[in-house]
Length: 360
Ligand SMILES: C=C1C[C@]23C[C@@]1(O)CC[C@H]2[C@]1(C)CCC[C@@](C)(C(=O)O)[C@H]1[C@@H]3C(=O)O
Ligand SMILES: O=C(O)CCC(=O)C(=O)O
Ligand SMILES: [Fe+2]
Image (tube, rainbow, N blue to C red; front, side, top):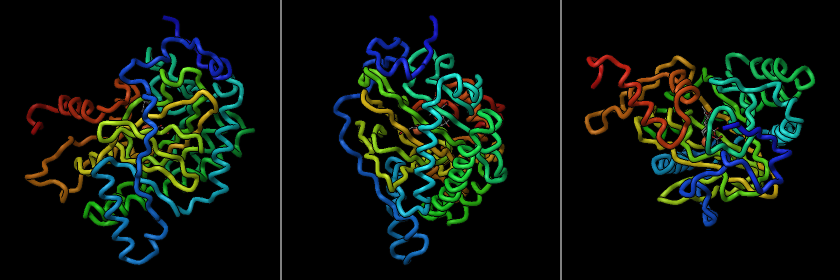
């Protein structure tokens, strides 16, 4: 079958959309999924500088949320409001450019970075109704983001590169603060995960969901658990993020002052399965484009992902084998479309690769 071209300027107004964008009945959005999910609101700035009793309460709330579904929100995060506004403005500036301009950063098969208009060519069906621009960010290489943007889009886009370089560096700082809380809540101390992620090799992704005239048959981002470690998401005021808990889909209402944080598969493995990487998706609407900024914290590519010894004992044996982020990322880009079972399927695959003598 001929793959459709996802040119939002053309497709957004049409009701006769190509069949590759239609999701099967059991997976398409349910009109009644507007019930709101209440996720704890964490005052992270207050907790890091404030009194020990407030800090203990925050740690408890985070631990409880991560054991149940892995979602919480942070406020008082110290991210400059102007930087956040610039980051959203640059999403508009990039995605409203003509398609050939955006395609200068075209994502190549098997690669996790670049511009993708839906995933025509990559997947044959259940295509997501979105455009994305993804790029790598590492604290050890501060020029990476600007260099990538200028090399792909040209010198005229240097300012956009600078905005996202600053944004990523702030996201990395915030993730390390969150890692301190996660370490504390798991009883392994503040330093354990902070140190593990100090040299992260993360992925920044700009999501742009154009309007769709068949919003109840399509999805912006299909149901999945993030394979990454921790996601820090800022959504605009449109709404569309939904989480599956207690057997139903519920929406996380946008808050301009808050970031939505969720545990990913790699952190679930690092916590020996204690903290959950939870199923979520993004729906689209027929009226306005929706934007979200997702910072995916990832370990250094070749660092061994394994839980600290204190989280493993006879009652809690190892839930997942050792692996590297390089191998899991590769798995999602070349062999398996990330969904709700990625970690499970990947773990079985890793175990099968090991010599029989090494399997426990
Ligand atoms: C490592 C990754 C793969 C995806 C991007 C990400 O950085 C983290 C989430 C993954 C994804 C969003 C899960 C849903 C399916 C997917 C194909 C998508 O809709 O974008 C996933 C990403 C991917 O490009 O493989
Ligand atoms: O856009 C959103 O609200 C969620 C996107 C998402 O889950 C992802 O990119 O992994
Ligand atoms: Fe996600």
